[in-house]
Image 1 (cartoon, rainbow, N blue to C red):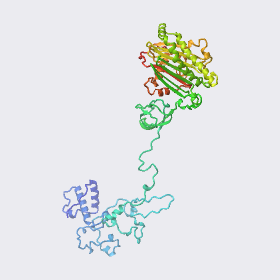
Image 2: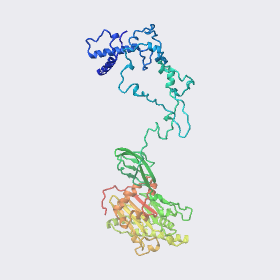
Image 3: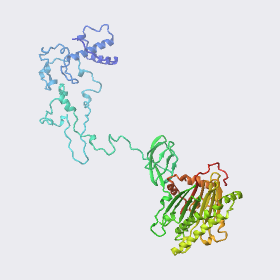
Image 4: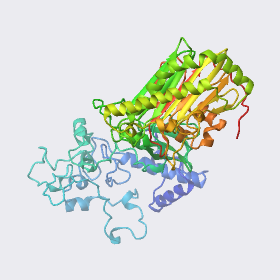
Length: 631
């Protein structure tokens, strides 16, 4: 038998301890190691030789098929190595007859007496025990409990758990196991036999015992709830916006790297610097969802925005009854083209719109291609007069129609001389007599028609009370001759943007008390200085615009008589206000919509009817540097 026994390379201390124990039991290096008597070996080599001998003999005395880890039988030394499978053992016993350790039967007394005394071959039981060990040291510690899991139960609900699988303690000796096998049949741990693969599959298969995984989970928990609940959005307030008005808000303080997730239909645009802007928004309350960095951490932001309605949008507009007597459209627009472009618009004031009453203003335009005269007439019916809307219409249409005859008859024959005289005399209210006569006759004709209308309507002429403003112009020798007449409030003005000049072509015409005005009547025209002082004339090589307007325009745009004469205010009105919204050109297809929309401008406390007539030369003079503006 060759020595194939190998041991790990233990430390010298472990060898010494084991060799000491073997020597104490009287074991010597005999058997396969005989002949190596230890002569010439170092103490360490002698100890190794002794340990090898012990291990070799243990290997020879091990019972074939003995399960690993089971207690070994005590075999007298010197016998197990020489026994053959068929030879009798010393003492007449069969070497392979199971002893009491295998059968569990009580030994025969005679066998105990005939058994030889123990030899010097030690076994694990013969090893010296450490202090405090042995049979006198108390009970042997039991193995650690095996953990098992019982099925979960509901509180206050009966439930029975099935028997624990693999634990036969509950089976009776005579009853079969639940699976039909003998509950006390030895398993592989007792016999040392290789387990049946089918049995292994049955043992390793998962059981139906319920565990915590079968308990219903609360909503928002479990393996699928992998995201943590985010913090609520941080509320912020944006500056209020005005409906239908461009909006711009500065960047939100304390936040950076902002992102917009929902503008809530506002049309807001988030700038790179964190600012918010929009061209126009509808009135309402909005919340805008954003996210950004605050103190180095990403947060959600919910911004609140209030878009306030424009006051004009809050006004109620009730259409007037167009089937009633003396009905008039709530708005009007007209354009006429000649050597100049004439355009006029008139709208009902909000004070009338919310009550469903009529527009009291009126206008009339005309151009006579034969004479070259352009005429614009505007009138403002008195709000206190029940039929003033009819009075303004009668006055405008009558004066405009009369001038188409009077101007060619009285002014044209002396037009060239008049223009030359006016140029030679210089600036001033040096109005030629033919001009005064024609305009005054037109106004008187209009006043007479008002009286006739009052008789038809069977009402006092005061019920038709109205103001009147006339503007007329034509070209004479490549120069423009411009004429005007007015009674009552409102205004007529000439704006020359190239020269930076504004020419006031009317006089302040207030009544006896503040807020009052004068109206077109025969009595007013017959008053001293009631005629010639109301007529104005001007000559210009070029001009930007010639305008006539009611007080619905002059009051909000030129608050005082001084402002109406200020060139700076005229420039602002024309360049930065009116022409920003309206393009005064014959080929502008949208001019009606533009003009009427501009007439709806908002001005606190100014809700009267509005009428504006504008004449623009077809070939206006080129713009030059601003000069001649007075403060």
